[in-house]
Length: 155
Image (tube, rainbow, N blue to C red; front, top):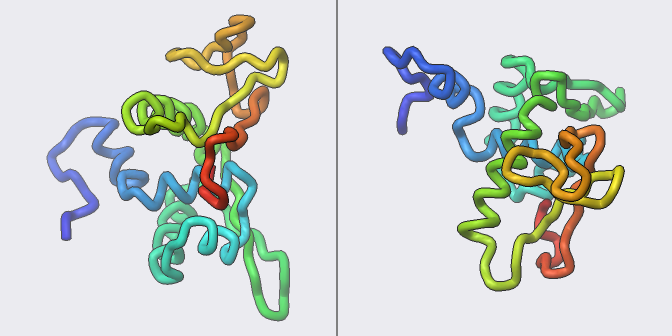
């Protein structure tokens, strides 16, 4: 197994990858952004093992991207909410999704789309609305499944 740390790398990309470089980490953040915040919902949506989800969530909590909030005493159950640091990954995920849509979407097209709430436009390559020119943010957009999306595929 590869080390999580990039010793000797004086680089912000390498440091960021120490936190979110494992594929489940970004998929967990994406799924929380979609509103799936409870452990069992995350597990089911992602198709991830309990142990891997527990480990990845703990790392995200330790790094300050996610906070745990207890919603049940008996049994103790938690939901996970993104912090400002976690929400700040939204443009990274949107850009990564755009790259994936361009090169890997397949003939049926991309499974999701993001829409500007102000006018219905979409993001350009600089996360500016392609219709009205407004800078896009998590707060002024919504992401939803397209018609070509396979049922139960996470956004």
